[in-house]
Amino acid sequence: MNLSRADHRINPPRIEIPRDYNAAHDLLARNAARPGKAAFIDASTGAQLTYGELTDQAHRFANTLRSQGFTPETRVMIAMLDTLEWPVVFLGCILAGVVPIAANTLLTTKDFDFMLRDSRAQALFVSKPLLATFEPLLGKIATLKTVIVAGDTSANSVAAMIESGARAPHVADTCADDACFWLYSSGSTGTPKGTVHLHSHMIQTAELYGRAVLGIRESDVVFSAAKLFFAYGLGNSLTFPMSVGATAVLLPTRPAPADVFGALKKFRPTIFYGVPTLYAALLADPARPKRQELNLRVATSAGEALPAEIGKRWTEAYGCEILDGIGSTEMLHIFLSNRPGEVRYGTTGKAVPGYELRIVGDDGRECGPGEIGELQINGPSAALMYWNNRAKTKATFAGEWTRSGDKYTRDADGYYTYGGRSDDMLKVGGIYVSPFEVEACLMTHAAVLEAAVIGVADTDELVKPKAYVVLKSGQAATAEDLRLHVKSLLAPYKYPRWIEFVPELPKTATGKIQRFKLRNVA
Image (tube, rainbow, N blue to C red; front, side, top):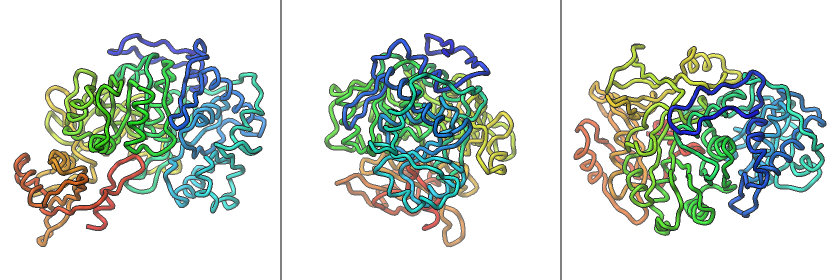
């Protein structure tokens, strides 16, 4: 079932989704007229999966699920690398009405134990190289009935399920408000939360951000460093390109600078999706390619706010803008973003069409221009709930508004500027200080690769900023050099009283800095 779409980027129409709706069927049906076109390319092997092959394999996989007794609303976990089998399994589950849980492949056995028990997943689809991480759990979780291996040709493999499935297409009777898939939050502040999304959510993000802001089109080739199991990566590599018939390049391995640049040079994508830490590493790579070796028309950034210095340096180096934006697992993708031709580095741009934003102060009052408060979102892709977590569901999903936990200000032109996580904000001398502002300032120093700022009490039990700094390879700087640098650019009370040089910063698998870990050791 195809939904009506606008042919322009600005002011998209209201996205009307019928009650009877299956997200996977919609994405596949949109591409029925281009069966021979590459839907996905494996960057490690160059192998391609065409839209026709994807549709055939997803339906055959769905039929095997049914024949094995997986009924609608059954939950299964996908812990697979970004190979050509990933979209087949994910879409095949949704076609069958089965609810896939896209799991972060970089987690530990302990993490997976929690997630499998919490979700009560009845099957696990796991890439062969990751199987060892799950072996200590096999036979110990009562609800986990079967384990299917991806990247294998055995009788108990994804390939065998596809091969044995009937070809006759059959789509489960799902509706737009049915649970479609889960994503677990990254756990940057604690235990991951199972975030339940509906069938309508993927296409809402594709239309409102993918088309209306990014301007994705059929001729695009896209490449995302963020993996498919992330909310950001799922839209980047699957929903957005499939919504218009574009081609996505998948990288099964972790996105090291050499591999990222290799894919950008070999497959010539027109859209690249990254995160701030990766852009910093790419720009610092002495072997980085010249501008003419790439074919980018636009790049995006999410996960954390993009320091202005990194954005400016990228545009100077490669001639394309980075559209810095913010999304969340709870909202599925980006709801606040810079736009092509209207980028203001150092800000997160303006509200994505279809989303309403507000900034609320500690007193519950909506903030005016320049006042800092928590960013809240009203939009069509907000998750249904956190599974098994009623208290946090009520705290985050407050009626029509979703609380982001991010501090922001808005200027008179309507641009939003990030001020840090609500639990990261510092009050120095009675005045709020944004850790991100100090971090961004530190990163304008030529020797600094990354920085994280937290609050630490001095001998008088007064909170002051402390910075953890990673220097660029071959560069040198003293703590006093950096303190003077910050003092020259920011208000004097904002400079870090203590600076500690470290080889790396603690991060989630999504690249977000885990400041709570730094606070625990400070």
